[in-house]
Length: 397
Image (cartoon, rainbow, N blue to C red; front, top):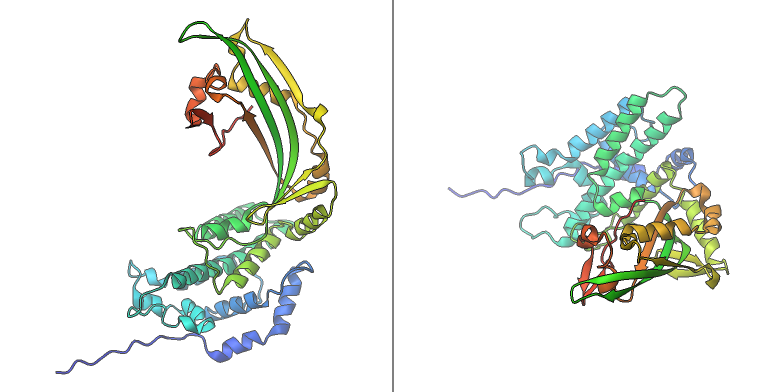
């Protein structure tokens, strides 16, 4: 008997007329978008809503309805059960994956990936990346509607705190399904106010014998400054291996992130306006980092603000300790960050305190700390010098 060759058929669940219909519903899109009251500088999100409309139509939901608690829970369950149907067999079954109707949206939007699941051809890294970011896009669509529901529910006068807490827990679960870079882009604060101290210190001691030193004193010179760091608004598309590949879905993913950040009141437009003003400020030094973050600091430097101290250790050598040194300097410094706090007060910047200790002979100065035994494991050693350039020590007063 002759064997009959079985031809695999890729099922396309998206009729071309439905795609065309949704793409041409510009008035409906604009009506829905106008209800969100997006800022004037927001890029046109129509393509994102076309994708969202196709996705929701396929599983029987009106993409232009507003979702309540029960509705959003049902929507998320419905989309994810269809999206993850390839797990039914307990492993990634190729036939299930290939016929997955939500993945068919991907192949309908980008026909060059029609054979992405064909076992006859090896899957390329770029194709795997595209699928990963398509997965991110589907989760972002759900997160957008979840965030919209949370915002609506929390604005009602008599809202159920239990239901609101449950929706926020649903947010956490969805975010865990995102790639790391996309997840960070959703929630990170773009403004960081850095209070930075620089402390130079030096010890004086006499050698009693070949194994013993007697501390006499130590001196410090310290100065402080305030920096404002504004992170860029670009999206990190890198995956677990660290490689960055700009996917075809990049613009829709970026739109989804921006929409969610807008609903979470991250004030990106206000931050961008602040950055433009600071760049034009002649009293500030501007530095652009490789990742397009900006760092601003005040140009003027007053040498009279350098504070020096002398500590006699002949009576109590235990006063020379890592904790004691930091306590003394932190107590004596009152950093003036009013120039930046006045500009960022309504933008809720993340506030960081950084302290840099500088010693010209760390082998002696650091090892003589009275509490050195308790902190020595937190230092690295390079060329017989103690340093922490590769990591930060955390100190809580």
